[in-house]
Image 1 (cartoon, rainbow, N blue to C red):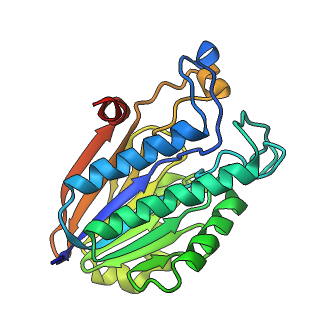
Image 2: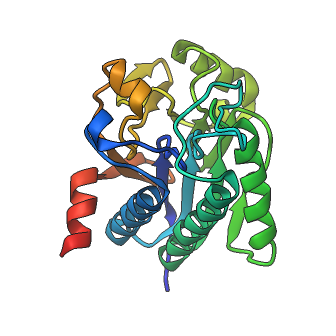
Length: 265
């Protein structure tokens, strides 16, 4: 297939929370490991089908790919959370789902990079998953897995510089300065700069001098704690199309209802 080397397609995952359990009578909607896998795979299928045959694809998990970071059903810092099943099973399903998303990207894009950002729910598990996927694709020259432990990730594409971080450790207004400090050369050589974050589960876009900082929604519903706290964010996934020189030229969005209705037809 011919790929347009002047295009990059970016698919950010906002906090998938694989392994989270939600009971409809408490929260208004059921959610478990099986649903999480179906939702994210179907969303990626939908978005990649809409995408142009770009030379590059960038798939980013913006943290909290996994809901718990230990067999005890706790986050990295030890907060108890509602989990669906055993941690070993969760890890197996996450690896299968991420392989499915990467392979789907390979059907459309010339090269796929997968970036697992560490979140406050899965600081260690995300690192392990990155190394597992890196080993699986080590003989595939069209796939790159970012296994760096740095909480700030970076991707340069022509005149575009993309920063990626979960968003739980620093305030959003600090991110442009961090980008300028940590990527001095890239900053000076690029015109279009973006910082992708997750963590807050709702859409937020703020343009600072030189950088657009954006947080992305999650496909997952609320667990009991977030439901009780009054969180009521929308749920969708997005794909950005970036031109090597012109920056972002298109965006595709698929909502959770559209994803699930597509399974019924």
